[in-house]
Every structure is written in structure tokens, then in C-alpha cells.
Image 1 (cartoon, rainbow, N blue to C red):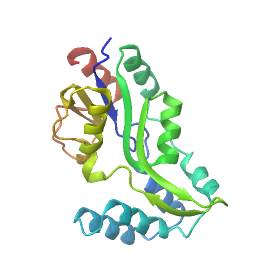
Image 2 (cartoon, rainbow, N blue to C red):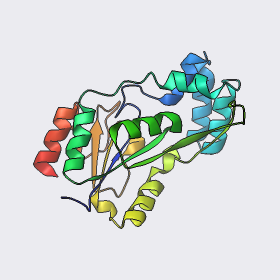
Image 3 (cartoon, one colour):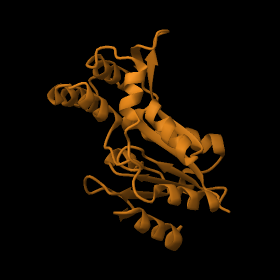
Image 4 (cartoon, helix red, strand yellow):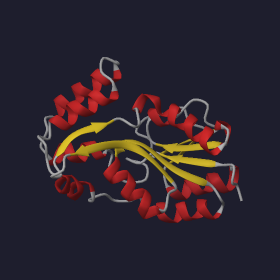
Length: 208
């Protein structure tokens, strides 16, 4: 049992087929993609922080009700084989976490469905009637390493014993022991690159 090993999963495009919870909602509310891209550019250039980015994006939805958002986000699809892979990791004794710059409503639902121990994601805030009024950036896309460090301290597991599985450059955190790119959107600085859960499991059986 590897009780001193921690596996961090990205969510969007890694555990679920959808590329982004934000994208799912932008499409539903028919948001102009050029505005979404401009907001992202402002964030990546560090002109705005993650909280301001969230604020600017959710304003484009015009204060929907929580149920509408839940109905959109429940239409996700788990990637093939992920349930079995999570069970395999749990049997081997890994601690499992989701660290996602996506949305808590979706991330927590998936974590609960798969039985994943820890879930970090960005929060949406609703008023007493259930209408969207704000958000909180718990996971800064450019600063995922800070969460990994917090988990390392909390569980007293060194970062060299962490494994991260993701599909973008934001997931390939410096200092993590093993970085695995799963179905990456681009060439990544990863220790292993795999294109299916079967290939991913083979890496764990052979190398970890």
C-alpha cells in the first residue's frame, strides 16, 4: 500500500471529455467567444487576477439561477475507463485529488461519483433565491503549484511523491515527482505521455 503517494488529477479534458466547465456554460448562454478569449488573455498577461477573470466571465451569463447552471454542468461524460482506473489506484493505496480551475458544482459532483478524496476548484456564489451573484478563485490556473504545496504540507507527503495527470501545460507543475500528460492538447513537458486510460494504467504498473 502506497500511503505516501498522492495522485492529482486535472478534471476538464482529463477525467471528463468536456474541455471546460466554463466553456460548457459559455456555449449554453451563447457568449461571444472573442470576449471570452480576450478575458483569458488579460488573465494570462497578468493584467487581471483569477477573481477578476471569474467576475468578468460570469457577468456574460447575466445572473442565471443555480438550477440552470446545474442542468448544464450535469451533461458531462467521463472518459472511458476512468472509474476502473480510480478504483485501481484506491486499491493500491494512493491518496487521490482533483485540482481544477473549473467550477465546484461539476468538480465536486465528479469527485463524489468517483470517490476521489480531495477536490479543489473555483466556486460560484449565489444569493438566497439561488441566482448567481459572484465567484471565488480557489484554483488559480497559473498557480496550481501552490495547491500542490498545501496538499504536501497537509498530508506530510513530499512533492517528489506526487503524481499529476493532466492535459495542458498548466497541469505540468514544477517540482512534482511524476508528470503524466493524458490526451494532451499540445506537446507538454511531461515524464510520460499517454493517449488512453489503458496506457496510463500500464505506466503505473510498470513504473510507479
